[in-house]
Length: 188
Ligand code: HEC
Image (cartoon, rainbow, N blue to C red; front, side, top):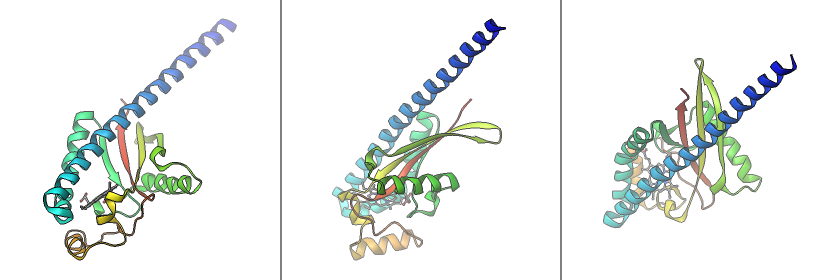
């Protein structure tokens, strides 16, 4: 009896530690995929701004953000996207889980946590399937204000209104949480 118990305890320990290891591994891979996605977005943004100013860059963001997300998702084998409590593109609106995580990020920021380090992971159950979900906060930087800040030039405003009639992503300040990267991955 005691032997069986010990055996079960060992099995249990192995399963839970390997599960934790997988989770840590997935967090690491998520961070890597996010770096890849953010890096590509930023370089396209900078390229657009230097070529034709913010109005040209808006068009680039509008056309390429989704393609880059698809490309990175395919290469890393999971779904990666950006979301926000105040989205510009309605397609980036959060689902219920993402909205509650974004709200918790606001509370954590208010409590003094460094936004650059705010993230959250959870294994959720969907239709009997375990799903790994990970989110990482995106800080607002000076570079973002020409399109997400308080003082937006009229030509930029016009272009934004034309492309995004329901735009909620203005009025941000440096140090605000602009949104988050979100990763969804089914666990086989
Ligand atoms: C040249 C204008 C411009 C600049 C500068 C800019 N953005 Fe955006 N941003 C956009 C546009 C346009 C979209 C909508 C993209 C789409 O259609 O998916 C967007 C969307 C986003 C989204 C996705 C959620 C949403 O609101 O739809 C996030 C997050 C975001 N931007 C963060 C940033 C951050 C952080 C910076 C600064 C590092 C930044 N942006 C700089 C134009 C800009």
